[in-house]
Length: 39
Picture 1 (tube, rainbow, N blue to C red):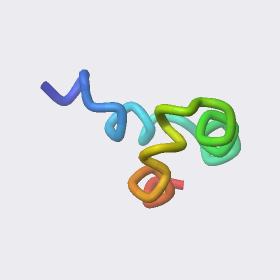
Picture 2: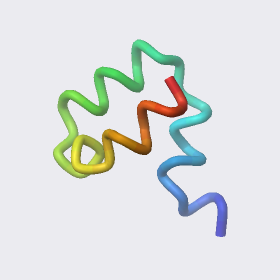
Picture 3: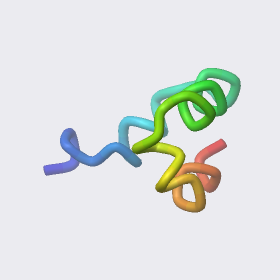
């Protein structure tokens, strides 16, 4: 289910917002290496 994939959701977020989420969300920060790809 792509809608349940946080990395797919990250694609919809602009880079500044995404960086904010990575910085402030422990769960996303744990996956930072994957999230950065979409910045």
